[in-house]
Length: 347
Image (cartoon, rainbow, N blue to C red; front, side, top):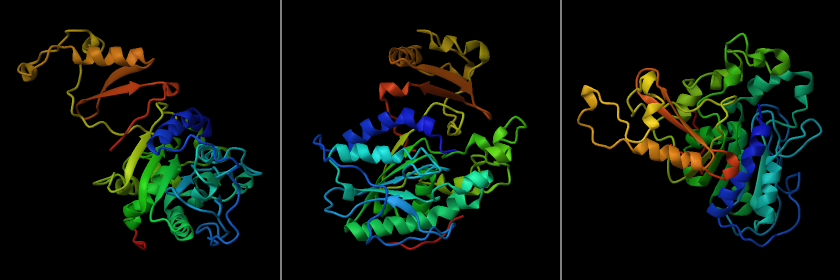
């Protein structure tokens, strides 16, 4: 479920946006991001595994806001003997190569080295990989980085489950004052398709992770209305002062798209292609007094097509229409999405 193949298609997009947004120096700092935490960094026991967390970071002078990288489910902060992926390590290396210091780059492995998956593949969907089980790891790691570096805030870059894990911790601890920016890459903010009850869903098989409806991960992400997702997506889901950048892939094979807001009226099937024609307007008694010339959607489509993308319309269950724009990642077009309560310590 780490979906690192998808991540590799988004990494260039994410890094380009981050480099501009955070004004990283063009000068190379040199060196390599390590695969361990400093010897004098606090030992943090994994709350669900009972062993020290793995990660990376370094001692040294800190001038910028430290960045914490959170990987997705079934992944690690760097390649291990049991997991060849660990792509967030490459992302951290990009920062190091463009001006950040090693002491400003930190990665947390909140699910161990993944070697347990060889003998027990159903651990992919089990409790130790759940979001709720790993909130304590993120909490302790963030506070340890703040104490170790002397910084007042951190930035967080999350991929996949690392996104919703960061969001769940922020809401649980009301810790928004500690995170300056959250960059969310392809997060399952509205659930995952791995949990589909369809007999054709092979992810339910033990060899593919055992993502059955009653597994720990599916209880959290099996729909967009689970207790966890109602919690993280509740009122003020993008709460300040934290700033948010959401980068979402158009591939629906892993994450659910967010529910449409239903602002636009439903479009009959016979009109769904014609609504993109210049000057076409669908007149109903309810829409007779709506101003316009039938050019807006035609202009939108021409812009999207010029960038190698496509636009589509679908009716929304319960009323309304959903318009979706799909752009290729290589165009380096990002998307801003402004889009159990558990009590924890507040720094």
